[in-house]
Length: 306
Image 1 (cartoon, one colour):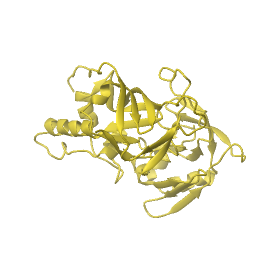
Image 2 (cartoon, rainbow, N blue to C red):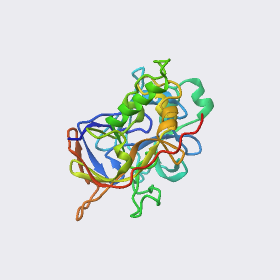
Image 3 (cartoon, rainbow, N blue to C red):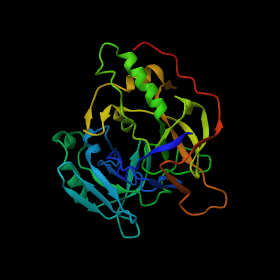
C-alpha cells in the first residue's frame, strides 16, 4: 500500500532541509516551510540558483517563528520573526515576478549571511537582506491554478511539492541507460536533489502524471501541475557543489511537458468543509496515500535532438 516515507520542511528558502516525523498542513504549505528568504537589493529571491552553497546552512524554526541558522563552520545566528505588528519594515519581495510584502530583519542580519559565502557571492548578488513572510495571505498562487484565491509561502510557485520513489528509480534507470560508457555521469541520484516536501513509496513509475486529487493521511490536495525543474537539481545538497548536467539532460530527453523538465507534482491543500483556522490537518510518516481522482496521463513532448 502506498505511503508517506519522506517529509521535509525548508524554513529558509534554498537552505538545508528539516525532516520531521509529522507536519501541520496549512493552506499555503507545510507549517514553517519557506517562511524566510534572502533577497537582493531589488527584493528578488536569492537561491541556490545564484549560490549553491546556500544549501549548506542548517536551519530550524520555533513555534513563534524564531529562525536559527548554523553555518558550515558552526557559527550560529538567531533571528526573531519580524512582523508588521512589532514595527518591522515591510519591503517588496519578488519570487519569479510575483511581488508581495515581507517583513525585513535588521540589515546586520543580511551582513552575517554575506560574510559566510565566497567572494563571488557579493560580486554576483550584492548586499542581501533576510525577510520573513509575516502575512501568508499576501502572495497568491497563479490564478490559472487557484480559482479560489489560494495563497503560497515563499516557495517557488505552489504550497507543496510531492515526489515518488518509483519515479526516481525510473529516472535513475534512464540516467544509467543514457550513459552506458560513463558510470559516473549515469550514477543514481538521491531524492534530496529534488527538494520535495512529501515523498511517496509504493506507486507505479510516473503514475503521478495522471493524478488530479490525492489524500495523504487526513489531508487532501488538488494537483496543480508537474513541477518544472531547474539547475538546483544538479547541485549536491550535502556539499553545495554543482555536479554537471544531470538530471536536467535526462528529463529533457524523457520527461518534458510543454518545454518544462518535469519531476514531481505541485499540490494545493484543500480545506475540509466546515473547518476554520490555519491548520488543515497533519501529515505523518507512514500515512496511507490514496489517489482520489485521475485524469488523462500527460504525454511527454516528442524527443528532439540535443
